Length: 171
Image (cartoon, rainbow, N blue to C red):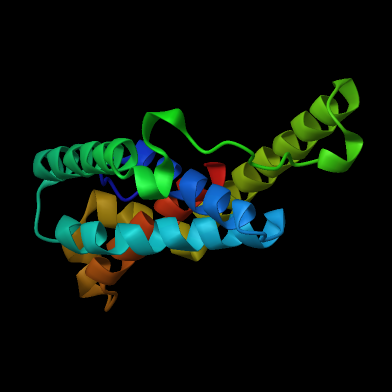
C-alpha cells in the first residue's frame, strides 16, 4: 500500500522460521516462539526500512533482493546455528499430542487456515482504517502527506516492519 517494493520477503520468512524453530528446540512453547519470531523478523527489517527512506523504488528492490541472498547464505553456511542445508531436525509439530496421522494433519490445516483468515482480516481492517488510508496516500503523494503534518518516513518504516513481521509469522 505504501508503494515500497520488497523482494526480501523470503528472507523475513526464513528469519521467522529459524527463530521459531530454534526457540522450540530450546524448549519454548510454540505460541510464544511464534510471537518472538514475528518480532525478530520485524526488528531485522528496521535497518532496511531506514534504507528505504534514501532509496528509490528500483534501488530498494535491489537492496531487499540482496538482503534475501545474504540471509540465504547465512542459513547455508552457519552450521552451528542452522545446521546448514541439512536443516533443523526434531522441530515439534503444532498438534504433537494428537500423534502422527490424519487427525493431526487436519488439525494443523485448520489452525493454519484460521491464522491465514485472521491475518487477511487484520490486513483488510488495517487497509480500511485511517492508518491504511494514510499509507495509501504516501504511495500516491508523499508531499501531500507531509503537508497535512504526518511523517511519511516514520510510516514507511512502520509498514516495512509490519510486513516483515507478518512474513516472520508465516515462517
